[in-house]
View 1: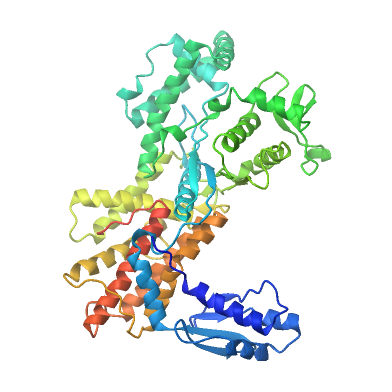
View 2: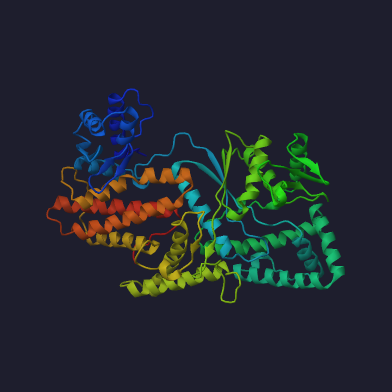
Length: 585
């Protein structure tokens, strides 16, 4: 594994040195280096420094230029406007840097961080005995992408799928199953859809009986007590619901092209035994207090109607525990047993207040602090074309499987229309990769905290900011490489670069910086934006720079090298987002 220093970092180092030499009193100098249409980079920070030093910006810029060494990396520097610097890099430096990245294989010259931490990511949280719907999409897709990005930076990630597998509804379900044995087949004998059909049938039948029969309702309530107290027969039937639900979960996540590990599915039930201790510790430390029989935590800055404080309820007056207790117990487990340095929750933005209170409670208890931080990646809502929460025409919540199936079907139409040498089986395979990729990219190209409209026609379009556009760019490059035959990609630093080659090369050089920045900010949309720009720059390069018909053999090899490095970067970047890049489309 080779670490390749980005050219921008080399330029910034020279700039900072020249600025510090010119203004010795300046501290924390930021040259504000930016990509520019007028040159390779433009420096904007001198204006602010000149104002602070009460000096003329152009004079200061001229002095800085005198302190910059041109040659190996920087070819030319000129003062522009009121005090900007336009910097042009040497062609050789660009090609040599890219060649070093090319030689590093899958890592592309991007070294993992020297001191990684441990991040526990809580994402993809379906509920046992219930169908997954469109509301479950974003947690799964965003969480999976964040994990891919963090893994690439060297962070150790641990997934946690905090599924809803505990609570009062299970008393109703289990009691019904005890009175109607044989309603659920063993999980090994059903597929995902059949498992969900069985669960739906049992849920609807038990709910109908619960609502109509007071005696059954009382038996169901007693069954909840038996479940919480660990009754063996009750737990065995509860486990049946969990196992049957997992069969269904796995079938949906497989359609989403996501790997969900069984040992990372740790639901609410896993923290049941630890909740009394959590309550005891909080009360002993004085973090939580008794109020009207309940154990609660108050906050000065969180108030509701009539300016009354809104407490976090750790334990109810009847002794029962709710979400706060399980979430706080989960924090204790993740920090003390998993040794997490960061806790990352990919949860609906509507739960932001809940997690704000949970995190503050954990800080007061000392479970979170400077060495362990927690973040709630609150995400927005998936909207329909009308700008309202996405529903069926009948006003029902959209089943996630139906949504994914339709995306694949639409993608098949697009692939079939463009396919030239694909069999029907290959078209169907590509349709899955294109359709699911389209759904993921539409989500990930939007800032997580914003809502976005679910528009399949736009998602599977070949034009615009879509994953299909990126996938076709990748497939086009693979086609060029196949047509090259025995001519292999090779870097030629001695060649002068076309403007389109320079722009593409400098963007390729910025891949690692972009991923690290996006991972630090938990912003997968920044990686998506980088990849879209990469594909767009490649399109310009392809239009302006003949590859296989270039003027010299060296130029052919160098442009094939740029093509191949672009393809590798697209492939790696898309993989971080959980999206496939088919070799042929």
